[in-house]
Image (cartoon, rainbow, N blue to C red; front, side):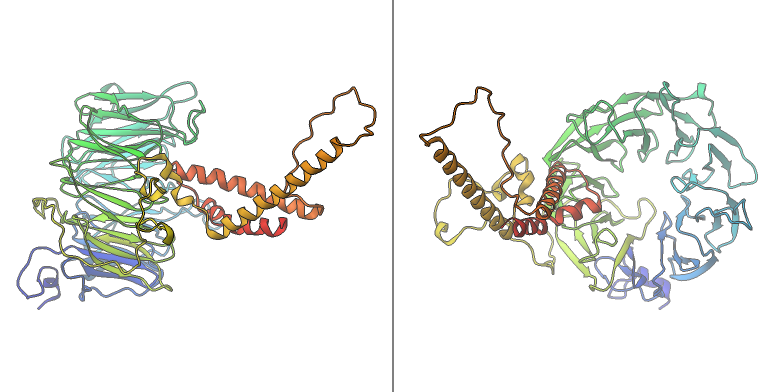
Length: 600
């Protein structure tokens, strides 16, 4: 049996349907294994054991697989998993294939030196089939460094310095069009073949609006735009084309809301179509836009927005809301490749809840918990998805899991404590390689997770067991109840003990002060009254002592605790905190104990 047959033969040796593979990158190198139902390693792929594997990617049709291996870039043919090209480029840190996989593009940082003050080109284009060099460009920007291709690779557009440069038929010796958009301009080529469409963002000068214009290539003069949208408040924009290349969403963002209405800045969502239609997407809640995504069918899009618990809404091409998913703690949207299943999740600083929806019937299929998920991808077959806990976002409990859309866990691969998982991706396939399957609401057979699961039952002391309880604890509260926002901030036993001692000490001081006051009021020989009223004394901090050095430490700790409380309030609203802010919250108990030792 030749190595190329491994990707298409089932366990019995008979020819089977395609089995998508997964490529795994971590501290132990890069390996490739089969997805469900096999899960075994692809023996034809020679594992790269090098720790210095910085990036990996599959071509859009899954024909090629490329990765950075130390000082080289390697390209593999996925039909045989044999290396077909090795490119010597020691500083490369980013890769991307063109839309048909014909070309591999690499980018490396721009470096100047005394010997070479002009620097060298760092954006290179190579032929995927043999690694032959095609063209090089000086591309200093890391953001938006990738050349953009039409689906048939007839046009290629690159944003270089302040210009969008467009080439045709991979003839990089001839610039067909050049458009100036300033240094912070952006653009996005629509998916699909001819006619080609491009949306271009040009930031406005002081006092002038920014503009987003939609063009049909090659009619790129400003007067020939099919649709135009202007807006003032935008530090940056992001473009989201639908799969048909007929409609585009533009999300404008400001880091700081100058009106002071929102701590999270200000965002807005605009719509443009190739028919010339424009609109503002009206959202039913105030607050940030957490995520938005087009359905692969191209006829609707979903948005998660608002303060936690956030709202999720489905919109049609007229930007009218057509379905509400309700309010829950969610911030992520993932459509499967067919668009018939939608996964809504709450990751990052949320607990990792997952919902899977049948988008044809607008009906909930299943729910699951995937705590500590930092990465999620759907399989090309549309039936399975993968979740992973990766470093450096999380360095504990690294590993990945493969699930069925019914919410059943099928496979789990935990990492050893001394190893790190950095990235995992599915092999890609051409469109329509996997037919859309009918959705079943019956859970398939799976496995139990290896990590212990936290009990969802509320603890009740022995004296309360077997009795009817007339109140609800936070675990019984509905997810939409604001009382549940602070459920994860419950104090520990040590903190409760410290709090109790501090309250007792405070009460004791108040009793002593009251007793002293009563004694002074009861004296018979009271001195002559002072007609001038005395100012009301400020309430002394009961935690302060007679030791000035201790008092300094007490005040410093209390200021830190105030900062932590503010961060916890932000976290409860769904705000994503920075790593150092989370570390501050984690030190709360330690600070409480230290404060208790100083004040006892």
